[in-house]
Amino acid sequence: MSTLAAVDEVVELMLEVPQGQVISYDLPRLCSALGVDDPTRVAVETDGARRAIVTIYPSNPLAQVRAVTREDLVMDRHGRIITGVYHNGRPVRKRLFDPSTGSAQRFLLFGTTGAGKSRALQIELIAEKINGIVTWLADLKEGQSVPEARQNVDFYGSSQEAAILILRSGVAVAHERMRRYSAAGRNSFALGGDPLLHVRVDEANRLLEKGAPYREEATHLIKELGRTGRSVGVGVGLAAQAAHLEELGGSDTLRAMLKEGEVTLLRWSGSMMRQLVSDGLLPAGDQLMPIPKTLRPRTLVSQFDAFDDEDDAPGTQGTGYLLSGPHPSSMMRHLRVGSIAPTPGLDPEILALYGDDEPARLEKASYKAAGEAYAARHDPAAMAALCQAVQNEQAKQDAKQTAATGGRSAKGMADRILAALAAADAPMAADDILEAVNADGGRETKLGGLRNVLGVLVNRGDIDRLERGLYAPA
Image (cartoon, rainbow, N blue to C red):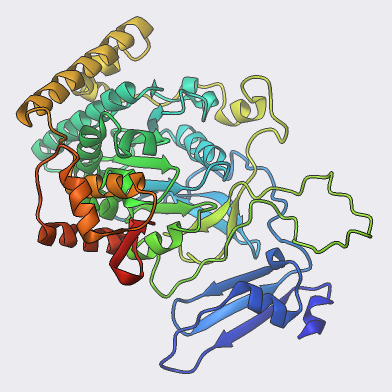
């Protein structure tokens, strides 16, 4: 097989295991068998069952990608745009709308820090403006994640309180459209009347993670948008740091709804793969090639040899998998958007893609439903007052909850167990966890109930069950 590594042409191998077996692979062993020193030259795509295609390239095919154009981002007759390319050069198409069913879409964008989420999100936001989609955006990185979007969307916020106001307005609009469509005898949404509306939350883990002040309400509102929005042209999208269930409000219902939409996974951490499979975001038989942080191959250099490590290797930002697409295990990379070098202010290339025209606005028939926050969206002082009101509401709720529990912790059992394990210096037995949990000021529990929750946390990937009945954080 060593001759395969020497050729300058692309080599493609079609592999199949015997009937009754499921194909799997170990990338380092596969590269060793092929005589390939650089694993980024190898692409593996499986069908989740018996077959795989292994492609060997002379160099990494995704090291360089072209810039995105406005033409790429015009929806085709199937409601899709071109957002990237697969390793084999074929276009990656993401659906913004399903004209065959009249359904608004749900969007999930996952990846670790530095994986390219912001640029991938910019592509979709630009496409929404180009296609006349009304965009409501909460950028929870204090507005730093996609700053060019601020003047190019209909409703914008950069705080958790603003995100709550945006979500409340989105739910109210969805309900208003439901009533209006029902009165007109309509049972689905069609382009050409009311505009398509997308409600997006960037850095959504900040809003939905454990301990976030508005986690419960935000989870409820996003679930409600997912339930009621599809048939009335209101889509919902989240971009988040991790794919863990607890980072999405701890809600199985929310996770199940969103994973039916357009799910994109960028570079991930080692613990995320098991969670993707257990949550149903990736079929159990599918396997994804890991995405390195850079394209520099690992090499062994003797201390007696000259070695220059000054040059940085190209990064892999924007590389990932479209899990909801027809090729979920085929590596892809988003088209380049914006200037290659950082800019001191707003990126002129991104602004040019957005264009100078006004963004699409909500239909007047839904202005009243969108409420006071929508009316005040361009008035900083009025919005600040509304955000303060949200804070005051939450403070009152927290005070009521504290009073109802007599000052004890109101956290759920899973949270209490995780807190006890995190505070421990070593893995703990169930009896020790029970003692720690019952000493945290919350409601006393029994060993049987605690063991049930431990089992759920193990199955969910939150904690590991070790030998001798010990438990530790995952």
